[in-house]
Image (cartoon, rainbow, N blue to C red; front, side, top):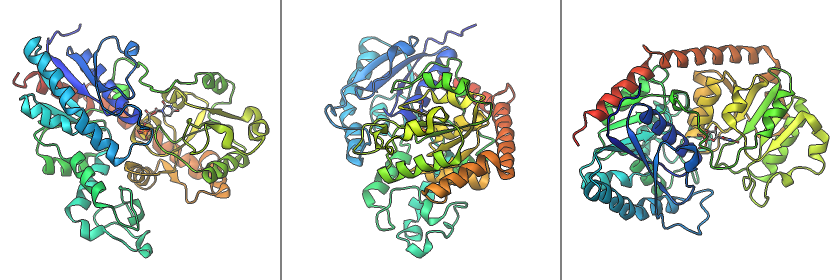
Length: 449
Ligand code: UDP
């Protein structure tokens, strides 16, 4: 039976796939717990309202019309934070004062940090949603606290361990670097993103059992209640699509025709761009591995090309039925398909958690941000994936064969199966994610309105 709490929770997502998805999933979870959910979003990447009839949506003028945001710059991210302030405040005021809505709190993506200022002015409790791992935030904060200990570093140090940040190496510093250092504006932005201002709690799309030591250390730093309630995509009672791009469902029929446990899935998420050389090396690595593959080449992900036309001439005819290339896949369905045996991933947090949940071991090809941290944890701590040592066709081929055909590959598969069991346990009635969700619901219900 649905509990009527008559309280509304406002959600403010950051308008990119890897952030929008967990926020909408959180919305479904809170709605199923009896809260009304109001999603205040930017005009850019407006969520598909029809997929979420249970939410009230409101669009804010983000002031970025006509700007290419497909790979947002630091300036774009600051502009979003600045431009959305007044529209958010005005809408909240109209709801609170004019319509007398009872708002329990506002939950915002940590990249939309302006929300905390607006909420504080209106005396509305705010809660941060972290859409990445605790290990990533911990590594960022450790570096902020003593930047001189880490930056700049020498080329000769690239493979040396980062002090206090095992298993990371200098080359895994989780920020974009120029000449082996991190530009001050990037550090400043990440500091702003990690700061919670006067927010009263943090919700995490992670599992307490998986990241307990990191969460404990972060708890000492932040001193507000933490609610790790992941994996959000499985905690949500409704599996509505949250995709911004149109999913090509025809690849599921293609997967149906493949042998069980035979296909390698390849995707670098919603933002990463690769150059033409990497596309070609990946293409030959896949072809030469002789394994069936499903490869997502997102439009615009190879600068200078629309989509797959950067592939070698006649490539698709050569691989024939053994390879399938799509512009965007229904990834969760793909990973859950019995034909899928492995995943070459950029190690975005959502992709990583989705893959573990479906017991699919990975080949890690991280590019930026949290991906380098995730890749090290996957390959060195959880040992459910192999790192790609070089972007060369022979290395790619060898790594695919190792994952799909070797004894080492079988070990990695066993570990990912065990890891999935631990996540399932967290979701059970006595499990940590389940209990933390109950605590979160009580916490929000008890907030002063
Ligand atoms: N995704 C998808 N279809 C694709 C590729 C990705 O639906 O063809 C989804 C994927 O399931 C995940 C999200 O896009 O939920 C990507 O988030 P992630 O954190 O992995 O990476 P990001 O895109 O933020 O770099």
